[in-house]
Image (tube, rainbow, N blue to C red):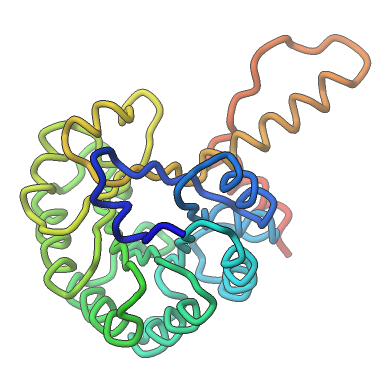
Length: 263
């Protein structure tokens, strides 16, 4: 098995596909991807729950136990750690390490579109690294994800530098896409930078040229799978069916469907 940390220091960015169950993870590993991550939206939606509510700890741990059997390193999205206690989050990551999980994503965003205090998140990063030093901790900040059309680059730089200093092994800024912004974050930290693949906005080759270390696919594969499944079923049904290629569901579409059916 490749060392997960080393994959962030190759000549080309690590392209990380994200699974939502064992079958999707096994298929991605068999396809030759060097590592596999999980998607919190996919895990939550598969369990009939909305994403980003901190309510999928049990499902995430169960999936992690299974994915740890794969022949490639696995990194797990644990949202905000399912707790506001640094000690409890650290214990969770230590448990994941005991399964053989290689990395985690730990985010500072919360449901309702808020960010936790940067210093508080840095304290959680420190606690996790003390409890599970062998796990690659990807410290995610949602400053761009939640910033809409006016993301706060200065706050992004402050947070990523703070998480770097707290011991994070990498930083993740979903929504980061413009060349100047990417370069600014790369200059602000010593650790690898992870960006989210956004069709038409963060193409692999351009991100590679900028020096990005890791490109995650997030919930894209899960949403594309839903679109393909529905299109395939409609194509078999009698009657006229639009002959258009299947498009991924949007994040909002999945959240709406799951939330509408939630108890």
